[in-house]
Image (cartoon, rainbow over all chains, first blue to last red; front, top):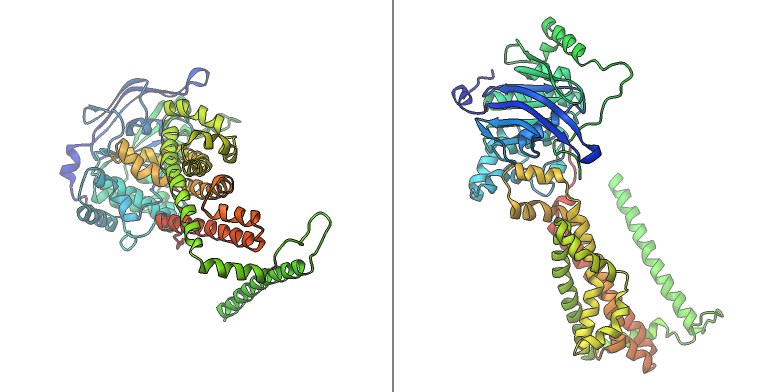
Length: 279
Length: 266
């Protein structure tokens, strides 16, 4: 059902190159290396999941891709251009609660076009169109607080995609949702991604989620995060949740669990913020 | 059925509230008519409510009332208005910039513990007219709560919201306008409400000491002329004016921040 309408477009931009990237956080005695020696690329239109234990620096890498923090070593480029600060070209969806509570759904989504200087009626029309795409027609005039967690995340995705970004960065966007809503939102995301093919880097610590969504999984070790395996998934699209019981899915899941097994008795680290350490 | 019962319950509660006020007035009447003396406090010079009502009617018929109220309102408008403009600007600067905070906060912190009323003698010396010194007292009274609440609101705006706005293409001024201002608005309105209360308090005190018109002056004049009923009329008008201005503020706050009262319909 999910025919990718713009396959040709998707090939033309959205390439990410991560070349020998290390990122240190904190100052003085509290400084530590969050990620170290990362070296991989994401092809245009690809959906890559970065999977790793909490605190492994995967959100830190995403924050650096978004431009919210600098890298300590190496080069981060999108379509050959080095990343310097945040840009609507690299849309970021956070875990939760980053919609503007004082703006109605339509105005939240139209924020990017407003910043570009688009006129009111024009940006409202664009916002309504993309809200229809994410399945939120009829909720344009609601405030975020009036929506469920899943609906709020749909608004987040719409608000980022309206800017037609080169890359879509998602930081555990569904991890605050209940299991049922999360499964539904994963299908919604694949559906949207099918219609607007955008290079997507999706950070998660949920193995099932990564296996269900991705073209490719980059598995990271505990801090300092390094790539321990790069797995290309063989599953055909469109996907449905029946996939999770198929033997190949289960085999890969067992393999990834093995990779991520913690040494006995070690507690997981605290989650790192994609905005770095609070000063 | 349930709503009918609930409506009746609400009605009963309002009847009880009304009766409570009536009972207080009745107690007051009895206490002042019988010159109740409790040793440490006496009602001998307290006029009964009936007399107060008569004085109130007399005042409402005289042209003096308008003059007193307009001069008080003007002073609050000027002093409080200046405090709002300067306080919010200072609050934004201090909350957003470390340099501004280092530069502006220390002197403000030194002045803050001094009650506005303690400024009265100095301000009479500092300003050419008593009018200006009274406006200054209302200004000082309102300034600190407004500054501090604005700083608090501005400094505590969720940095993920700022990061999101930046990611969506917002520059510095747009972030101030679209994110920081609405994000800090609830805290600013709290500061404005506290400031409104202290500014009335300071005004009335200042008027009692150096005014020639104004509702605080009227109340104090009533005391010196031994029109005891007028004292209470003045007190009641001060209360009403304070209540009216805080009602205006909360209503304006509700209208300006509709997202805060939107009902959750999941």
